[in-house]
Length: 209
Image (cartoon, rainbow, N blue to C red; front, side, top):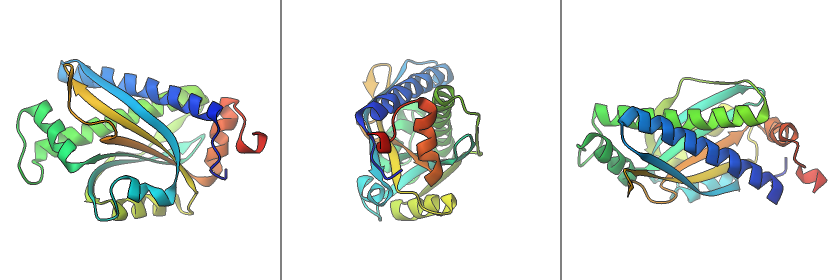
């Protein structure tokens, strides 16, 4: 896949993303006993080499939950948040937050939120593709964006060229917790998996227009 993603492909990816967001919101609502909404404001292809700048630059500190998927397709999925919005999320969900850094409970909350969001997306993706997808155990990291993305691409083994980015925002009982795009999901397929996705979905690849 050369990175050309057409309108029909984006429509399918948006549908998958919206279903995943709805499922994630339902799971978070059950966990918290409160009404949670997760909206998807943007779904778009993005060259790997633009991701770091998109999240604020190589030295921007971000919090990330990382999952490797194997099965019918393989690749990496990253749930990322900037630190101010991560603190706001912890404060809304627990009522407490440290001014600097995160408590063990706060990190546990963020790990679980990332796990739920990624899991919901994987389920939606698996249902649409008809593939069995096996996720790794989610890992949480807080580091500079450049270091996190370098690790993620090294896990792929050989770099592909295109990711799918999904910008989202979370609200709790009708009040916004995060801004649009504050929580992001990146799907970084292995090179051979990108074309498998669209072949399985029955939509044309860039070679077909």
